[in-house]
Image (cartoon, rainbow, N blue to C red; front, side, top):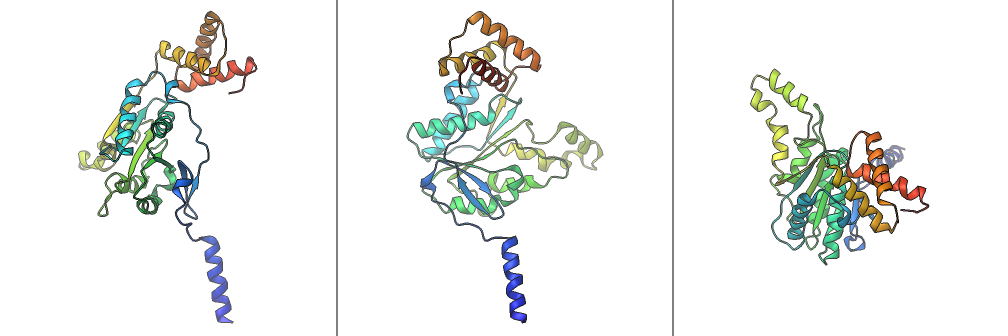
Length: 280
């Protein structure tokens, strides 16, 4: 009777915490998403992205990130990268577009996305990636930021610094954030003003962004860049629109949105294409 009870308890615990799935066949896809409970890497058959040529107004960041990724894919030294700045300016789109361009140039490289809330499991993920030394992995964390009582940033250091085991040589981290220091400025100032040693109070959190070798800033775009983005989408999809009408409608659209960005340009294009009876 006791053995039966113990068996049922063990089965119940296994259902609550399933055994982690083994590492997948990395040759089966160019991109994966990391999930937990149980740990598993799920392949992404088709990544949602736009061509690199359609990303206007971010030429410097594009060139730097592409060169860094090519170096890494070729087996050379490269830096972790933090893409920070204005919302909707193509930070995550650039990461995915650069990955596609590297593949198009014939350099095998696998994109692995991890959610911010799953950062505590990053050590287990790194063990999976470390077990495939013949492949190169870009670990991608989108919209990364930390609140006052958030300790997830400590897990991120496993990727940036690697601890005693060291970061796997076949893994690099790209993260995007609206904040340069990954935490709100008012939080930084508050900790500095109330701490006994103000400089040390925020050093651990603020210095986290310093561990990224590349800082790529994204700033609000000009009207010319905004219109160039729309022109690029129109040319890519073969739409024919009167230039004067297009300019007037595009400017009116951004005025109603209260700002310009790559996201606003894409949203205007989707509205325009829909009204013209085109799918995108």
